[in-house]
Length: 510
Image 1 (cartoon, rainbow, N blue to C red):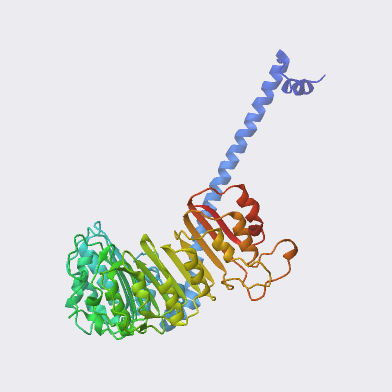
Image 2 (image 1 turned 90 degrees about the vertical axis):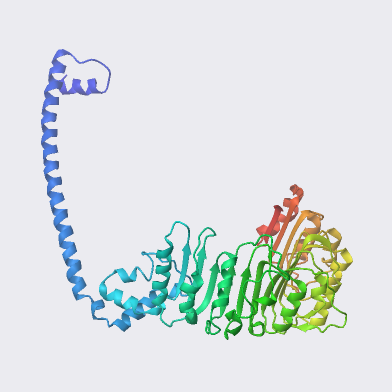
């Protein structure tokens, strides 16, 4: 048996080698160690060579890029075409407000070279949509300087400006110092400020906003407001918005604060959109504004009552173009508002009553009948209505496609049974219904009633499959939520098949 054969046996077992075998293995080890050392030297030499070659490659690659740049067709483009390219680069964000950041347009474009910087600075359209956000960590002087520099680059191009400052930031005369010099170019103005700062608008000249189309004011809550009729945001006599010839869109949000709506002194007759989110106004003032705002298309408001009842022979306020109306009645008489308006073009109506109170839908039924409207979407929240009242309401709305009810306490099995026809040839109430959202504190219906309702709305089962109900839309979405309640196994048994078949169905605790 050879030494090498013995070596294979030794390497594959735990048997100790003999003296001769150990001597042979040591000789082999010395030889392999010499070979390994030589290989490591060769590798180190090659790695050093590779490092040198990579450095030469990078240097050569950089030179090639510089030479190619010299011959690039871009250098031959006239400034007018470069300007067009810049505008195309920012086209997707044409309506998005940009924060001044060096790595986003237009600042990023201006950092490429001096030629591009000149083109960018000479293209006011690149600078027209901007959002400034300041806080106490930013230097006030630098903040003002940045705003003034940026706005100056817009020249006469219409500007969309958003200005947001945290409440602890104090900037004296901010609106007069920064906004006023460029007010004639402002088309959209959005301000997030301390409410008291809005008073500065009284010092603007009457002709300050010839291009203004949209204003959005987000203020801060005013504590202990005792102003008669509500807080005045600015002097109604001198404020310039009444003279803004193109102003059509107004949004005011002063949380939990009652404001004097009429003293805003806006050009009510030309407004198409009026939204008073979180801001509180009186219902009588709101009705007077509606009388003046005959061109409104969209409106939302939060009202409180003054315990003033309008006379029975009051003129009905007709809003011929109003398609969307949202009323949040905190403690007032919702019926008082509904009885005094006519909305023939209405498509979306949202009514919310807080605190939760019993409500009789007679005024809404009369409104729908009087307006001869074709309502598409109805949302009801916090309104306790009896079964007969709700059924009468649904009968007046055959065109309804979306019904959203929350905390109404009147949806139960008998109401669902009324909405579910017995015969396939019977036309159900709300035949065009596509979406139903139902959110309650305590659920008062069974999964079986909901199953039968879904079946009658374009989801037949068993022998009814393939027999479409004529002139009835297929239900596309149904949401059922309850604050307290139990959705047991019967819900899955009765309803899951519709989800698998494609119905957007959601039920459970919320």
